[in-house]
Length: 167
Image (cartoon, rainbow, N blue to C red; front, side, top):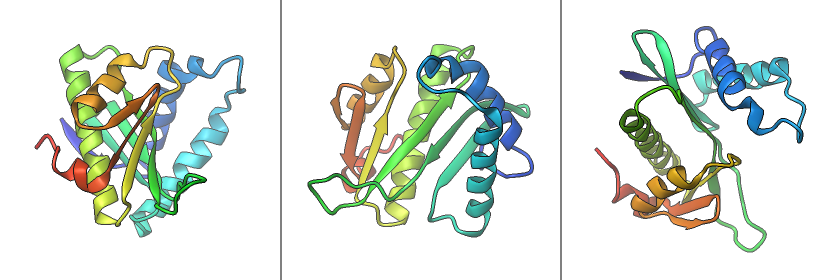
């Protein structure tokens, strides 16, 4: 099992396919899925990441060259009541056919990467959200890590998160 930064030439199609086939139905009836739009956005973000790792973070995990998970974090989020920057998780996607323990391990590794990336770039708050109907397990992982969880939102000060890394 190996994590690498997502590459625009090698990882985009697998990311798009996983997102659409496994999680795409979560938005049906609300948004109209467009794989071409998603492919463009993943390609642009991964290309920018090659040259500037401070803008967004997209990493993939593969086992024997098969994509088993990926995560995507951005920056530049703010609330209307504070001036502190927030890094938001766009995606924590794992292959739902994997054993539960491996899925939890992958999610924890994604959370570690999010905290480490935010720390590296001086972003004081990390936030994870979920649009999935079944988000209790995902939020429980965050709560165990010290995140404050409210509904489908989990957030933590980056420095506190650094104290709770799994490795």
